[in-house]
Length: 230
Ligand SMILES: O=C[C@H](O)[C@H](O)[C@H](O)COP(=O)(O)O
Image 1 (cartoon, rainbow, N blue to C red):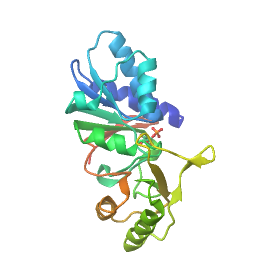
Image 2: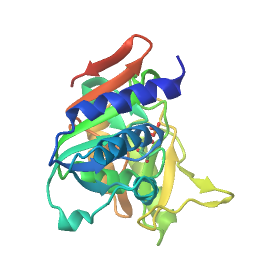
Image 3: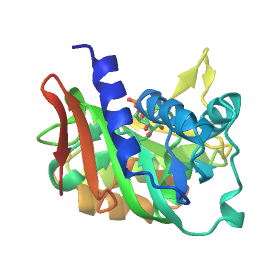
């Protein structure tokens, strides 16, 4: 079974957790897109939902399917958020941000009572870090910020250089008008410590470590959808 089919399976499985009247956050990425498409079918069939989005990309997709996306500030706390991940490690520690949406995703996740991760089987790993960790950085004085990030990484024995993410040869700019630096950590042995240290680094807007946020994951596998708990 292809990874795409596994993604579709997990996205469809998440629909079972959406109930009429809920306030739902829509994630970003190819797996979340399957969920959004399936959700649009439910809404067309009469389900009433209040929806917010984690990115311009997802907003555009949702609106193209006839869904209405509200401003999170007009909605308040959410019942549910359904989103993809780049890696799912032990305890449902995650790396996210492969699509550059990590900041708005984290903002939406933190306003949701329940966060469900949807992913294909390859995303489930024993140790986080094979996927390069995205770090969102304020563009002003970013070189100084990168030096501080390198000092933090060294404390965690990660001797890797953050790489500026580019798109079509130009710096990738996030929905919040920031830069992304990707760090090929290899192995992150202390995700909690690294997450805290990056969070307090001046110039770092946020990072792609999502810890203690996911309630459970729906993993698409060749043997069907498996539920992973922390
Ligand atoms: O910024 C992007 C998000 O964190 C995505 O949810 C993540 O990259 C997973 O994307 P995909 O479902 O396309 O693998």
